[in-house]
Image 1 (cartoon, rainbow, N blue to C red):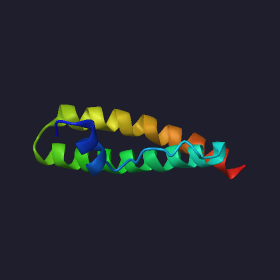
Image 2 (image 1 turned 90 degrees about the vertical axis):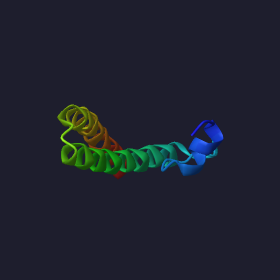
Image 3 (image 1 turned 180 degrees about the vertical axis):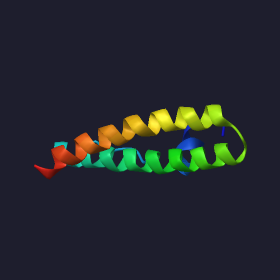
Length: 79
């Protein structure tokens, strides 16, 4: 992948339209974080299968922080 355009074509997270309301933006971030959590879970699995504990640990740390952020965003969206 050598261009931003190419990266955006295969990305699981999509660009915002800049026309969202505040609630819609927060919901989009919530959804994006959930996608990242799923990707990190998959990365951890692959890394462990390959015996790469360092990558698995790195992914776990990122996933843990994202899960905390998702929890906070879920509370915000519940209002």
